[in-house]
Figure 1: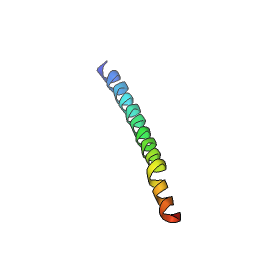
Figure 2: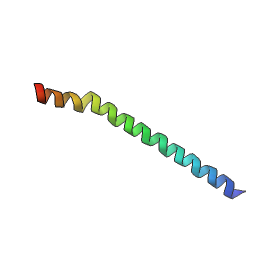
Figure 3: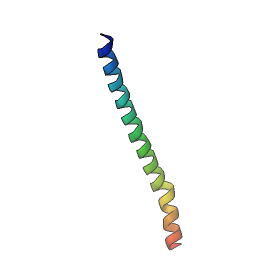
Figure 4: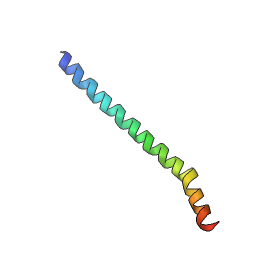
Length: 46
């Protein structure tokens, strides 16, 4: 029975990693929109 729970444990870990990855991408995108993009625009037009 340990093989079955081990498999589901790995699947749970993969799902967690996916959520973490999505969160990181979302965070980076938000940082880009709020900080990096405005500074680039200021440099271009300012």
